[in-house]
Amino acid sequence: MSKVQEIATAVENGKVKIVAGLVQEALDEGTPAAEILNVGMIGAMAVVGEKFKNNEIFVPEMLIAARAMKKGIEVLTPALKAAGTESVGKLILGTVAGDLHDIGKNLVGMMIEGAGFDVIDLGVDVPADKFIEAMKANPDCKIVALSALLTTTMPAIKNTIDAIVASGLRDTVKIMIGGAPVTQAFADEVGADGYSEDAASAAELAKKLLG
Amino acid sequence: MNIKEELKVVGELKGVCFGARSMGNAPKHNTPITPKENFVRFMKGEDYMWTPCSDDFVTVIPREIPDTVARDFAFDLDIPEEIIHAGGKDMFGIEWEYVVSAGGSMVRPGNPLLINDITEWEKEVTFPDIDSWDWEAAEKRLAPVTSDDRVVVTWFFNGLFERLISMMEFENAALAFVDEDEQEGVHRLFDKLCDLYDAIFDKMKKHLNTDVIYFHDDWGSQRAPFFSKAVCDEMLVPYLKRICESAHKRGMYIDFHSCGQVELLVPCMIEAGCDIWSGQPMNDRLMLLEKYGDKIKLNLSPNAPMVFPKTPEEAEAAAKAYDAALDEFMSTYGRFMTSIVVSAMQAGNPKLYERVYTETREAFAK
Image (cartoon, rainbow over all chains, first blue to last red; front, side, top):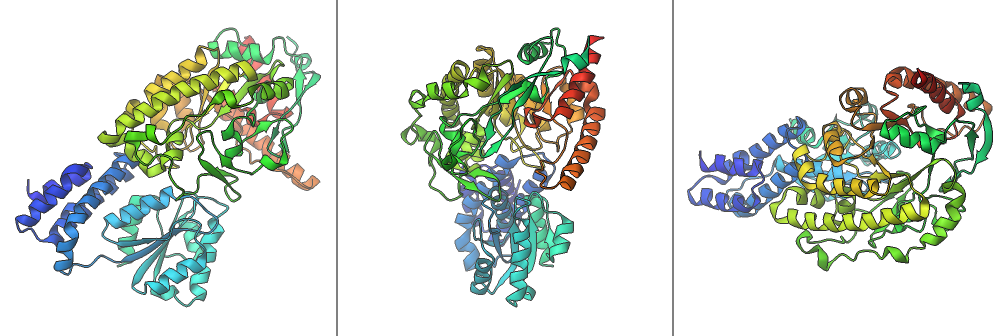
């Protein structure tokens, strides 16, 4: 097994304690940082996402894989910067106004980070103008992801999208939405560019939206 | 057997309030044995006469238990207005906040955690002094509803995983279930929680005359369990088993409330000794009844929306919708009436009680 494959296996299995060491060994052996990132980290997290979707693994295993990846990224980051490797893109994420639920949002953020994005997490109960403020502060942001867990807070998704349209920034980003009561039909109705039903699918959707 | 005579209303039983809303008084029927006696027989599988249903139960959750107010789930009498939707500190001092859009309370994400390091939680957690809760006041106030012939159901917040989430947030709690460095700390905490819950169950039996503990522990999201069966077997089942034993040794039953798509974990509930499971409709409950109906009972009710009609037209529409839901319920679950109890949450609905009583009384008498 190659060192990069060893890293991927360790990330998939959440071997938090050994990933950093393996990444360092791979770098010392001259493996390009981008290869370690794309195969050992992002590739591994894609496998994790697929297994999660298929109920072969569950939230704890996904979380511990993400934790293992973070340990690897800490070692890898200086090498990535030195090589000029850029992230896939920047994504702004938050749970909409009136809704305090963060579990689903956090899992989505973690999987999207695992897919190579820079994630700006605005937290929960985020008013529309805070999303717009974040978009203005991050003009290179490519995707805005909105979450709502409750039927009672779903209208805040529409309000947020309407506010983004009114701000004139709608054409600068793709908007994806999700949460327990959210459906593709609702996404179509409120003018979102995409909907996903779980964290793993959200990461796939984010990549797809970038084209 | 004269079912019409048995269903005759011979008295009125006092109802509790759920927060600001009165649940209404319940009719006392002329049943040949008491609802409580029938329920115990039903759970033991011995000579029961009908499927325990709605009006046979009364739910009490006294405000003296801090979690009742924190989570906004008081089923009580003479509830002071200031505790409704108030939130506040639970029995471990964790602050809960009532969220209007959710219609319930939650711990605000980002609040300081009670447990920052599960491996040393003993340094951070102070267990409650349950003797300081005024159980005598609760007993005295609730005696009019806990001392009749109905089955007393007492909800218990929070369970094990829910408690861990409240103490260290969801992600940290889930991770601690599989991180070998943290698992031991979780085991020690759950061990101590079992002792605490055992002591609380004792108070509930003594002061509230509780027959059924409705034990809250959500184990899944709308699409899947939070954790695998193997993780559940290792991290939760041994403790849930102790909790069931705590109830059983006092002659109480456990109705395990667990939301989410958790079909996969039903064997864990059975292994632990849960008597009843209150699960959500996204589970294939008919399949589960076929497969496990002889090992655990399901708590079910007609799938009718909870509405509060304001006009006669709305009331008529709601009645029609309920009739349809009741027909659907009886045609779907009718053949499993020995494996289900019909929810206390729809108490006060004469149609439901009469239909379930009549059909099951006739069937069981044969």
